[in-house]
Image 1 (cartoon, rainbow, N blue to C red):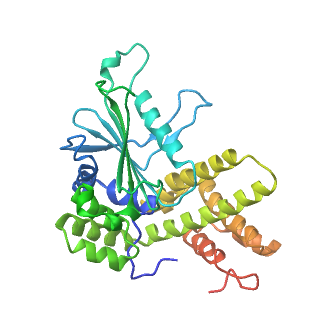
Image 2 (cartoon, helix red, strand yellow):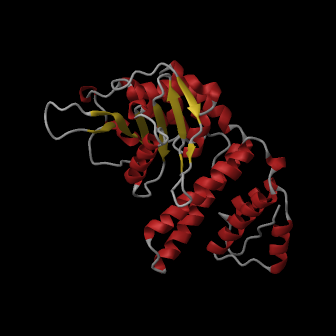
Amino acid sequence: MIADDETLDPKNDFVFKRLFADPRNERLLLDLIRAVLDRCIHVTRVRVVEASIRGDKKEDKSIVLDILVETEDGTKIATEMQSRNRGQFMARIVFYWARLLVEQLQRGADYVKIKPTVVIAFTAYEETAVDALHTVFTIEANRRGVERCKLMELHLVELPKAAKVTSHQGENPRLVLWARYLGAKDHKQRELVAQEDEVIAQAHQALQELSADADVRTAILLQDIEIRTFASELEAKHEQGVEEGRVEGRVEGRVEGRLEGRLEGRVEGRVEGFAIGEVKGIIGSLLMVLASRGITVTADARKLIESCSDVAQISQWLVRASTMGPGDDLFAA
């Protein structure tokens, strides 16, 4: 649950996207990207572009990035925030990396038109055993004197390691500052870091404004419930012997799909325009949470839930269902 006096956590991928993809916060996004790429790629301006990439064929896997930007020279930079260690993260990021490169050319196009592709991945946990905040992956030859391929770069920033950085490790001080802010354990710690820098202070102000939006806070609660529900589904599927990769893909797809569609629509204030199917989607999540917690739903209760078209009311029930006990009343005022 989120306390009313707290700022939302920017390590949440939904919050991260809402904060940095907002056109009003272009300066913040540019500063963050520069902090990561400072010694690799010179970036003076970025433009946020469509972050979903669909496959050419029906069976191709589509991807939805947190933030995708394009620089003045056409370089694509994808920025991802991973809050939980769900396994196979690096494989997924490399897949994103490859898809971004492949998407650049149409049939018959000249390869000289390919622009560099960069992925920046922030993790709220330690992904590697390397004692470094920032690790860069590229394609390099195994022979000296052969120039590395400059078309692909992957930058991994492991936020918890910011606290371990010492001056002699050669990390960019600007990146360390951003990592300390994004990786802060709570809002009080974030406030202290924000007092050290003007741009970080602006980011903190923008985060406070975002945190004051009741719809955004509801969306975060719904996201948490979705993830916990799918975690229960995953555990049940394991007991039935279902292949882990298929279940992981289903969990990832449903969470991303609902957040990017139903939840983002709500956050943008289009509650009135919700399609019947979307309302039924939230109702389905509510019934799923109740079932996963072993709470019996009577015929009358189910009828009341399924007949409700008030998104705010259904959301309140969904939040209550995630914490209530077997003997509690879902509909209590």
